[in-house]
Length: 153
Image 1 (cartoon, helix red, strand yellow):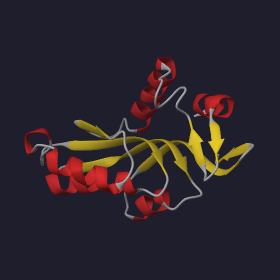
Image 2 (cartoon, one colour):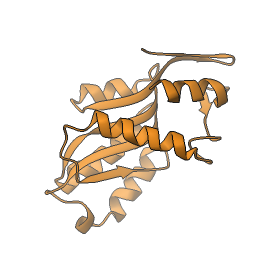
Image 3 (cartoon, helix red, strand yellow):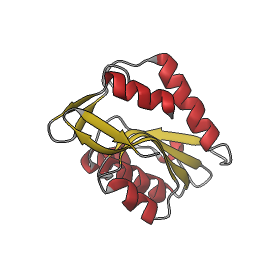
């Protein structure tokens, strides 16, 4: 998604430890125009899926996902649901694996996962794909240094 990649290059900040800060337009502050375009792109990419629920989590780590699994009421997610998972970042995959576990335990059908920014140089995306889960990332960062980013085509 060119609009997203351009915005990452313009306003994203690379910090030591392969941290990409996009909080000026995606996390802490949201550019509503960009968010709407991201939503349209996910809708286009998953238009062939009978989605009834979307789950997302604004936290990273399996611990948070496990907590969510304990408090997500069965009345909100069950075998009749077709679920799309949406997350802002995918690196090692811990949060997404936690969400996948929630869906599996509910008996719902997982239709796929949509990621805004994937760190392609980390193992999470490949691990999810190896599980046979449909994964659509809008921007895949292949490498990061203190002064540059490269994207996968």
